[in-house]
Amino acid sequence: MFKILIVDDERMIRTGIEKTIPWRSLKIDTVYTAASAGQAMEMIEKYQPDLMITDIQMAQMSGLELVKTIKEQAKDMRIIILTGYDKFEYAREALQLQVHDFLLKPIDEEELTRSIGEQIQQLEQIRQRQWELSRRQRTKGVAQQKHLEAVLKDYLHSNPVSQEREEKFYQEFQFAQDQEMRLGIILPDQGGMKDEDEGEFYMQTISQICMNLIDEQGRGITFTQEEEGVLIVFFSGTSQDTGEDAKENAEQLLDILENECDRKPKLILGGQVRGFKNLGISYNDAIHVLNSERKGFEDIFYSQTESKKNDIFQDIFREFKQAMTENYADIDAVIHILNRFQTAAQSYNLGRKYVANCYFELASTIYFTFISETGNVPEESLNSFSQSLVGIDKDKAKEVTEMFLWKLLAKEEGDEHEIIRKVKNRIHEDLTRELTVANLAAELYVSPNYLSRLFKKMTGEGCNEYIVRKRIEKAKSLLETTTLKTGEIALMVGYHDMNYFSLAFKKHTGYSPTKYRNLMQK
Image: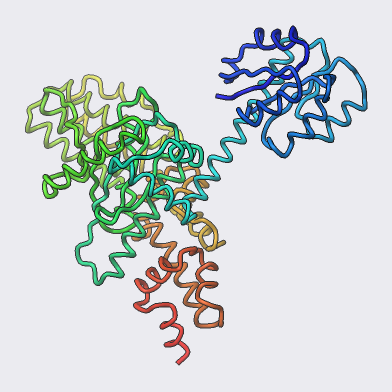
């Protein structure tokens, strides 16, 4: 919501504008009024309105003089000038002052509403750009990230946070105070690590991928804590939300981490809470699970028991659906899961109609996953498929479903090489730019999960691993053929963190960058 200031020395005009404009529909929740330019300056300093409507002709100081005076003080404020004088000089001076609209009295209510609406639209775009920029800057800025982590850790451990510090926290990072969230703790699979450097590189890679997929997409906050490692605050969508957003983001993240790191980490999710003040409750939930059930939980463990249907088979069926969704980019895996479902349906002696409904639900789940992940609408008709299931036996229903899935997914096999080719071209074009699974997926209009699975299936290595490998190959070439400093080379191949560059280089070559250069020179 936004704030507006109306400045006019005629009370009737101030009151008229204040009472007649539909402010709430314009996303304005606070309306201030001022009878003079001097009073307006005080109110701007105190309340910092987003938008100002001001008359030109006023005693002591004109509206144009007011605009000149406050221009430095309120750079982002949108300004609408109202005047009863149709003078070219006024209009020209207003343009020079970069006033955003110039309206003549008597002003029509609809015209003024339209003008205010346009300014609000511009303000929303500015806010969105600032928000996106601040997210990107935070994930790259060490000092800002440290400040964020310090406040979050105080919330986690229920340490007092002063009102001033809290206000600065919300203002600087632009988080909603009533945000719904869950605290997640990632448990990495560090078995078989050669040495401490490899373990540290693995943890930093997890942190980087989480930031790219969670923080930069506005889905939450990634930070580290010495005791537990990588922690994530997963945001849920709205106050009405039941936590599904957080669960879905967590599941997608684990899927991508497994593809990109060739290791399967686990994740504990604490209970859902509202607001950062209650983050410690979710954290304590997760810590309790970590301490009491460390060996027993599945890939994702929820501290609050999820409700289950009475029908036992429905739980098994949900597992088949989830497995199909997770592997939908691999037609062979999908058909294998379909065969397993057929065996399960036979062992439970399910009725023909019930089994046909299950096959339809499995196929439609894959169908809509395919659309949402790739953005392509397939030629195969879901309606035709459902009609073909009517009145047939269970074995025939399985055959019809298998045929439908082959037609739907096998076509992708021919297109997959094209997607991978485009990804590799974008990586080779410029190694210095921001190269992440999320960014590359956005450029190709597919989801990060789809790209990650597809890249791994077609190339045998994760997309992130491929990016790292290409950067290290370029760094090796520069170390061998130039006298550039190691820090300069790190930047030239896309690393802003020297420690992370050194760890990556050592993982791929067995040497630090400096030692590698010395060996090559000898």
